[in-house]
Image 1 (cartoon, rainbow over the protein chains, first blue to last red):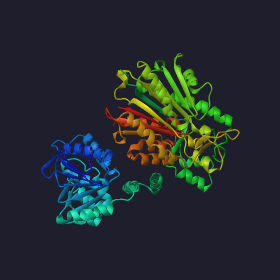
Image 2: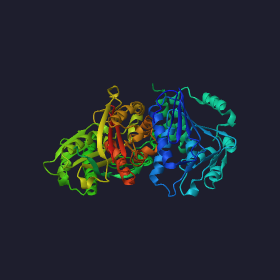
Image 3: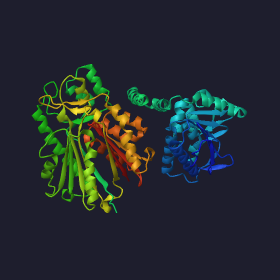
Image 4: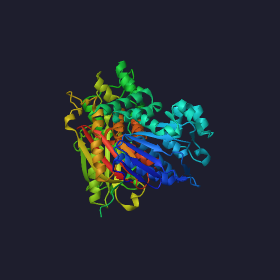
Length: 236
Length: 350
């Protein structure tokens, strides 16, 4: 991945990456009808490494998440899922704000990618589909994150029964943070980016982590985590 | 071509009985609610500790400084022997096959050292080369691993043995201070033994090849963890800020070692971190931005045994090997921390 010039654009096999001064936009190539899951993993890993090692942008926007992923006819080996989770984990740990822009269906691996972002904005006709179970494997971190957002009942409906989660429901439940009309995307996105760009990235990063862990820990554990994070936050 | 020195097998042993944390508080006669809270909030469920006996109320009888010294000598040798036997059994070696031994302990002073006692008791060869590392504290397991690995790299056909044997209950002091309560609520007894070598028929699928080490000492905090002397015993002092001092300094040695091998934190597949205490672990996790899953064994060892000092990280390493999830080519990073204030790091590759 070589996008180390400010205001540069590069196209890879799957992605169109645009690096502006403080903003990186990553769009899945709309010319592609389907995306191979292994190619998706490789390109996401490359972009994650680039964002971690070289990019100075504070905000990363993912677009084109309605792209269909080609699931291999044979269920991939467990190591694929381990590497996939590792990439998502790397992305969500970046000291950057990640925003997923949704327009239409957002299925399986793309849904997992959207859920690992900090924010999601969506058109009214957007929807999530967790259809991994019917393909014979588990939907990764969707079981962890979606349940926290929407509760067990709606998560079960979405993940186990495979019923689409509409953008309007997702908005009510806090999964989607803002709704937009396609013609207003640029305007809405600009305003949203301004609103959510943190003044202190270290504090943002640590608070985000504490929030993600909040449901999983006891009070005593959470207290220890908070103190460790606060020391790191205020340490200059 | 440089030989690939690998960890070939780990043995662990714990002396005495495993007590629940609440039982230990009772046996030490803790009545102060503030001190009881320290015991209950330590994230430790149980520990193996060796008490000399109990009075009619079930309270631990007072041991003199000399009693504690004898206890350390007896238990460190006995438990060390058990750990060595397990490690040798795993590797299919005998005491006669070991060419170098490094013994680590900080919970008692022996001269001749622990290595001499183990050699006599277990029948190691008389020409075995050896070193005793005494008084370096919880980080010392990695300090002990360095000469063993260096020896094996110099002599690829030979085998080295690292033994960490700590009897933390030989350093217990009974008083009403908060500092003593923290120490008495944290440390447990245990020994580890790890065999290193590079023989090809033993090196596949066992432990990781040891690539390199990195150290950091923070002299400004030399007094933050230390043994004092009260005229008879050696109460241990732990500064309450130490978890955060370690956290604020942890990135430096970790990144320095990774850079030598062109790696980043994200390239590490397995973390083996010293079970120093919950606050220490939290501080490491947040400052390195690694996950709770990465330190699952560290946390579990702390919960089951308390802080086992120099050998604690080897208990975690053993759990990782028992999981059988490490793949060929995976990177492993070990971190131990202790007095100095010190951070020791080791990078390995499966």
